[in-house]
Image (tube, rainbow over all chains, first blue to last red; front, side):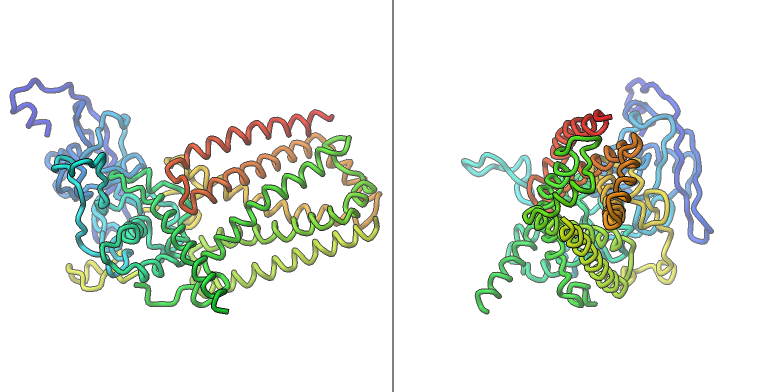
Length: 253
Length: 128
Length: 147
């Protein structure tokens, strides 16, 4: 926070003022509206810090979510100037004089910048495990001879991919990029999990086939999941499965 | 998991893998067919835009090989067009019942288009 | 999709669904038409759709135009008189652009959409754009140069 910098004895950074136009909605409001706040920012101020300043200094009723503050939890996902970002690691200095802050799209708003993530999770298949181990921490001891590590569980379930996807609005039943990317990760590395049901779940007009390869989800993802690539890989798997089953039926006939 | 049957279960002929495969295959075929068609009708005959006169059209379509290619082109482009329209229409958030009707409607439109086109090509070829 | 309210804490208040923000102008299902604030993939998709719809329209227009052949040389000759007009030749260039864009981007969609070279999808688009531009310039000079 700006005051923390001053309190630690370092000279304060140059302060300028940016206008934040913040989406507001409370239960009972007829429709959402926008409140404008002039916020003093430094060269390293993040969007989250600016919003927190608004919450502390200007409007205690502003609701926003945060947790880890270092892009690991996905809780602070927002749209800033129309683009999906994690507020805790998005620098204000790159954003222009007027900054529009809105909740993520395609998920119902609970209040202000807080959305109802139940609708995000409802899109996942029922066997969605709560936790899957990630392998290979960066500073973990390497196996002898191993040249590179690959982490398989990058998804922090921030919902930014669902917000960015232009296809979500074309079908209420579309499961979305995060759920499909999850399914592909399980199919790619089952670790004993049954994948047939997952493939059947994905092989649907509102599953993997609703995706139009737009790649907005991959562009929005802050965590290197590459959901679009995974959806396309899933489609390749589904095609292969269909071709093999047709060949089996022909051989039987 | 999904509890209501998806459209792939109600309309087996329209499974998504089949739709994707046919869209891709007809698309690849069209790369060649459209190229042949455009070259033949714009880049062969001397004249403005390479456009053929009436006699030149009849002479062209009267060739059995050309006739076959143009018929195949008509069928392939119609299939690809109907599948593309299906993709656009399915993005309008219709329910499963409406989607099934769209499938049937597009099959009908495609059949009418192909039949009309084949009659047209056949009639012109017969005048050659 | 499961009912998100199943077993959820928060009482009746959370059963009321709040407003859902959408991106893009117009009615929700057509939001894809608005590529503002989106990346290359969204622009490519919107252009693919628009050229595709244009080509479907052209298919039926073309069948209608070809029907004049049934009415004999005179009718077709009248059509040729219009079709060799500079405006129509310009529209032929637009048609060529539509065909090239839809075809070359279609190759990209087919490859990427089946799981191949998904990490090169942007490069594929630019490669298609380069090829298409060369062919378009050649074709346009042929169409318009004959006048």
